[in-house]
Length: 443
Image 1 (cartoon, rainbow, N blue to C red):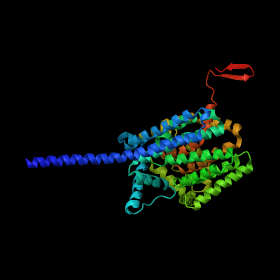
Image 2: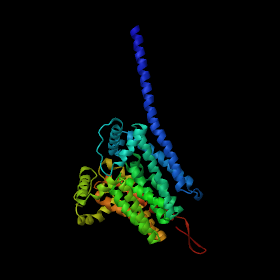
Image 3: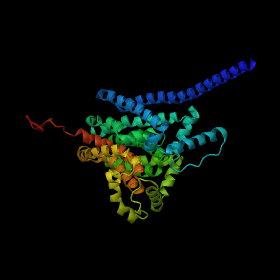
Image 4: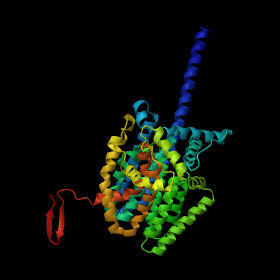
């Protein structure tokens, strides 16, 4: 009898201990979700208030799309991160495991003195971001997913404001649905990888650059330089060429050329100052010390080790060979993959993104053509960094999986032009005034 009582007591103690442990675990996960989520929601609302004048009638729309984007990115990222089977095979980014593992090693170094992991130069920023979240909220990936979702959602008000400043309110109306509904802008920034902060920083830089071309102010100059310095800690080679394009775009984009040159020099000076303090210096050093021969090794490895590799025979190890391949590479980077280049089930998720992107290209062309007439050189603040980024990635990328993911860096810069092109479309049945007092119905 005594043994039975003891057995029941041990069972009850085990159940109570298990319940208490589960409560502690779930409480930790709950805090890791709720605290960042509440803070992110407040910051997103403040960002919308800062970028969207309520008197223009679009404030409610931008708030709705921003919060919807935040929720959709988190839910999608949470599902993909924790799913297995066919969902994991098709949608999960394998490098999410690496970022999570190395971030945990950093926190172990901080808390227990374990050896510090070796991090790649120009890519260390996201490891530190995750490690900082894990240090504050515990080793729960959900905190990183919340932050990524918030950064992805912030692209909505930032890009809408950039579009409004350059092309007007009617064009800005089209920005939120394009940003939220484009598949690649949902798939990659939602997961525990660095795409969300990269795209966010590009959107910040583009918005600040548009503000500088509008009026010379110090704060936007700091925002451009600061975002580029931070981008150097995430993807150094892209940050370097994008910063060059932005500085050039700002310098020649203002109506007053002298003021534009002064603004461009100001951005460059602030960026150099930040580098001198160490922010982004490792990424800058790695980027400037990479030559075409090294780029060729990376590109060939991408082309040969992935089932979606392409142009494995191409050699870009010299300037002449790189320039010779560039036109072909740009076509592939901007419009690929083409239907005959889809190989295997794992590449099927790129088809919806590819079709939507192709459908937006006519609007991009229309927006670029008419935008030049509307705002002249100001458009260069978007076009030049987009061009420098496209040229770099067209040479450096050798498989379609990487291409579709990294093309989003170009798309974020071009969304204002796409939105302006969409706003110029004339639907069937709309009456168009051709001469004073004369209306013609378009068939």
